[in-house]
Amino acid sequence: MELRAALVGCGAMSRAWLQAATRIPDLRIVGLADLDVERAKARAAEFSLKDLLVAGDVHALIAESRPDLLFDVVVPSARHEVVSAGLAAGCHVLSEKPMAETLADARDLVARAKAAGRIHAVVQNRRYLAGVRRIARAVRSDTIGAITGVHADFFLAPHFGGFREEMDHILLLDMAIHSFDALRCMTGLAASGVYCREWNPPQSWYRQGSSAAAIFELENGAVFVYRGSWCAQGLPTAWECAWRFVGAKGALTWDGSDEIRIEVLGRGERKGLFDPMTTVEPPPLAPEDRVDGHFGVLSDFVAAVRSGSEPETVGRDNIRSLAMVLGAIESANAGQRVEIVI
Image (cartoon, rainbow, N blue to C red; front, side, top):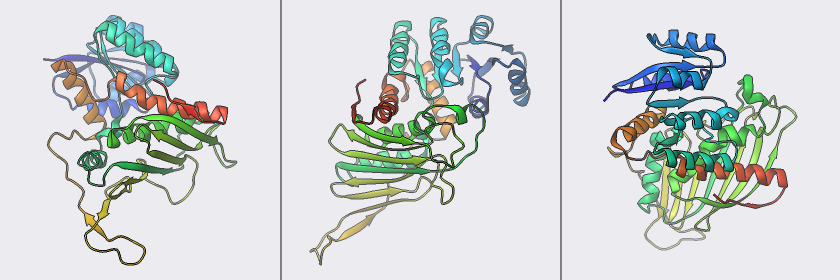
């Protein structure tokens, strides 16, 4: 069954979307829209997309191209309007993250998707990394025992230019959402409360909120500690963070790239201060582990539309990741711990 897809928002991120979308069988791009129509035309030419509509806004795009799927790659402030328009027109919608600017908007979009009988999902492409899938498998199999603590460090210094350098809460809202969602994927745990401190160092080229430290309480009583900066020059971490998972029976570390290490309690008597430990090989990927970044999440979304099932990153679940971000921002603004309520 061929599906017709239109994409709105032809900025830098749209390239990764179109690279993935053009690999999916029987998915035809029928329209592109951007406030800068010339930019949309340039993106169409870059991907040799012919016989498609180029429009200046989402309403014209939907009315004239009549898509089955709407790909939402707009800036966060425009997301609610774009997703609402897509759902109202009967489209299934896949959005960039974050799914909304506020929890009220997120709840509204979840309700709109349910009322329309359509899928609204979010591109949380970090879930579709091999490392995340393998760690999730290790945690589910009780390799290190019940999770008691998780630690993630993110330190990079990219110069994006454009809207990111002018955003409020840039690290938490635009980047930490990936780490918080990956945490939920790998542990299966949601957050119930958070205390966060946010700051903007003197050397920062971002307008606000380039650095943050957050302590989350997880629903099983464990603690998740996130430390990050987007203006930390030198000794960078991976884009996916450097992770440590502490369990009742051992620990797992991941460098955010290819190295996953696991040590668990070994056999034998304690000698001196420390218990004996033994190294365990991390589990391999299984055939059902869906990977490959943007291609993985777009493929999952398209497969769900075709089968009538629900994709992993559906909005009614992804709102829990957004709630972690917005809870951290609320805590940073208030200077105190806040409850995370969906």
